[in-house]
Length: 197
Figure 1 (cartoon, rainbow, N blue to C red):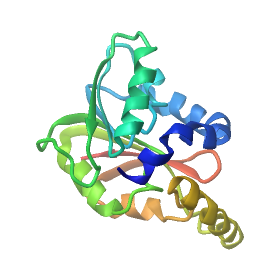
Figure 2 (figure 1 turned 90 degrees about the horizontal axis):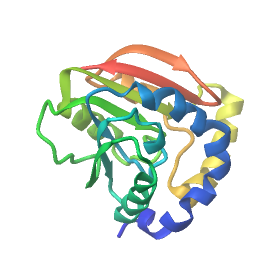
Figure 3 (figure 1 turned 135 degrees about the vertical axis):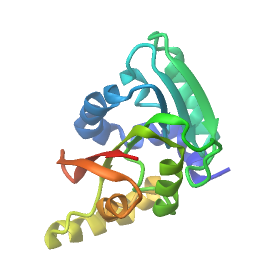
Figure 4 (figure 1 turned 120 degrees about the horizontal axis):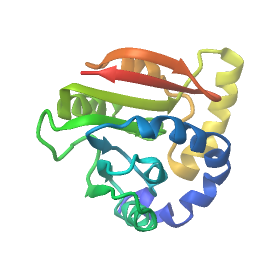
């Protein structure tokens, strides 16, 4: 068991406020952009599922078996003729062949990834050459006062849910093998990155 298995039961309650104030709107904006066979990484308890377009074919991946079980419960309550596959595996070692997915979806994930460059390498490997990757992540801002505040918050968020508020995730993505086509500033410290192979 990993730490997400241990606090899966109260994970949604801990993040309830940020989900309602920020993440819900971001999911509503970006999740419907998925097309074709999609890999949704580190899905947690499955908040993205309700925003999948009807008929979507999605592989939902998470390293926590208990989180995946909770996401399955959410999926059972949604009737959009979805074709869902739940995959228990770490994002650092994806159990898929090269050139498998039309879309990669990552929302609020890289704050908790231990080896972000390895994950980006794996995601690039499994994305089709004409595919698209959608990253919606929060990160270090580069503004001294704000980042000091985020550093203090990180002490608590890391202990609570394993999340760092001060990772330079934009640098990780921009230095990866992906071609970054568009970057947009979003709510708070969030940015979106639309990438191609």
